[in-house]
Length: 425
Image 1 (cartoon, rainbow, N blue to C red):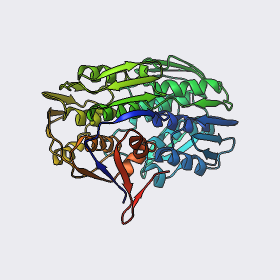
Image 2: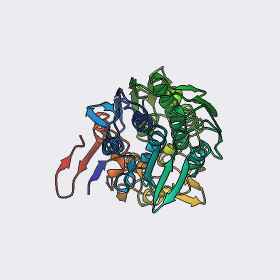
Image 3: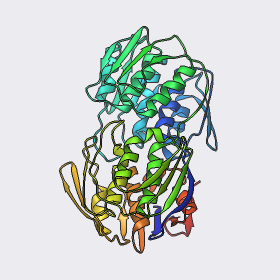
Image 4: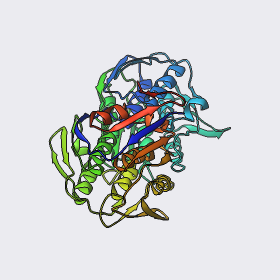
């Protein structure tokens, strides 16, 4: 099992380029199933989840070719409409092939998703929406089975905003007969990026990025090129890395307008930043102060930055309260931070952090993707050496993280069991 070794205490300095957004690339890749013609997707992050999605598309019959951060996909012919458990269990986003398969090929069999240990995240909203569009949906032996000769437009209301649900329904509606309206839709930038790609291919979509999305179905979609948006969560993680080490970092090729809630909270904590169109300069020489944070669906504070901010608040003066409203099991990193000397108490869905802790390096274990990032940040700030186990979680969502951090001056390496340090390629 791989482990990451960090010797902390060095302020990070320098520039880092932000990769494409994993959470935008995954639905875009899944949506290639909706039509024939070649799709060339650039700025695709080389992370495990993206590789898994490529494998899944290949199993379904699509021709998939990766070259560095470029994916070329042709789904003119699909030989299977079943997404098997062996792949889906490793990545929840596999459920995103459900809507495209059903809309184009009239049927889909998709294993119930697995992935992260941060809550149940049920897919009932996806299924209820597809049923409103005329699909016959059932659950059999751990698989979702859906059939429809052709989906028809419908008025769909989501009880809660769901990102993958909105994406699945938007993709399915693109080939449905008639008009579909999704109300209380999720508003994340990744949904807008997917809509932009679909519209390049001939889809008719209005309102992506708002809570009401209207899709007028078309008969077919053609191929197109697309450049994936930068990853706002990766960008946020490197901002916090600069802040927690009292460093000065510059983020290149990012989208600050996708990060308003995070930037406001960092400024509230005393972090100085200069923001340009696609660049952020951070200077964290000043003292940090504790703040309160409440995670919410976009444009609120992202749950995917909660673990990183908990780590940051251990270095701030005063008491901070971080309230998690999106997922019910997302404080598993807290116990590991306590092993490093953090003073954190969890009360239901709130973490109360008493700051100005002197973190000390220790062996810790990652529980999910963003918890892994939070532990890396704590290790960068801690005195001594931190060893993080189960870092395969990191590889699901961060491209060349150790390499990028070393470029900022961090002392960090990846080790395989029984070997010297190794790089991820």
